[in-house]
Amino acid sequence: CGPGDVTTHVIKPWLPADYSLLLGLDISPKMTEHGLTHHADDRVTFDTLDIGSDISHFLLKDEYSKGFDKIISFYVMNWVRDLPTGVKNLFKLLKPGGQALLMFPVNRNFQKTYRIISDRESWREYFKNITRNISPYLNGEEPCTEFQDILKESGFEIVKCETHQKHDVFDSVSVLKELIESLDQYISCVPSELKTSYLDECVKVMTEMKALEIVDGKALVSVTKIVSVIRKPTA
Image (cartoon, rainbow, N blue to C red):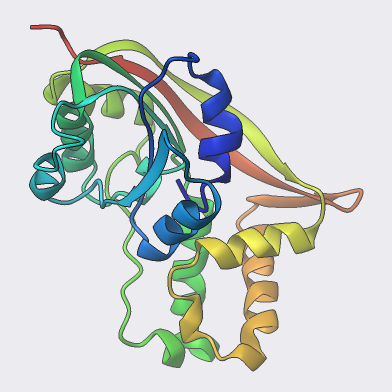
């Protein structure tokens, strides 16, 4: 979901004209509220959900209790620390025969950057009560194979599960910094007068990690992505 623009401008045009409900979900109430304010209509709405936790309360809501035909998830599962629970929750949300499209990075460049900086002496005092957790899953040599095992254990049929190497291209370093800031759930811990320095150091760390190249003014972030299409059995 995020701010809701992908839900409405990317996913919505894919849907058949007679779709009944398009629901955008985000762990952040702030993002949910933004989606409701700027993108909701008679058949598009937004709600708050942590896919990596207990979702029984969510499934009890009348409007969601029958489940969903399709789930589309971009750049979400990499943030889920308890990945098996997250996948099992996807299974619970789908109707029998329902399908899900999942796409997410497994090299977790942004999360690793935040953790490195939080541990540095110059920034440690601002994050002293915070733990930058990264999921222990999919960190080995065969992340796709490991993810397939998690999918199968949750009951899914695997239509496709592939790993892709590519670069996410940003028009400028400034645009990349905007994303770095928006993804950092603890950015408010950084004093406003130090935010520019913090973002500069994030860029420096990503460069040191060889996760970032600057080419002709554009910022290229290397990404290893899993793309998976899965189906919940009909019986």
